[in-house]
Image (cartoon, rainbow, N blue to C red; front, side):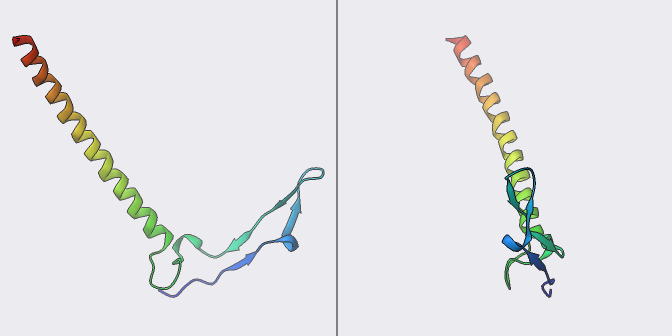
Length: 84
């Protein structure tokens, strides 16, 4: 995939004044930044975000499974404690 051309305008030349005595620098980026690879051969930001989201979902499922196992072990421990 060919990189998408971007034009970036930042710095003092593009400084905007907001309020009295307060200056903010805003960077304006044109082009689809989310689908632009970080550098040649690397995945795009969108691909990285999708991978992170998939990993998070898998971890949440694992946490739920472990929580169920912990509750089952607590129930077994309670049964043993009741017998003693």
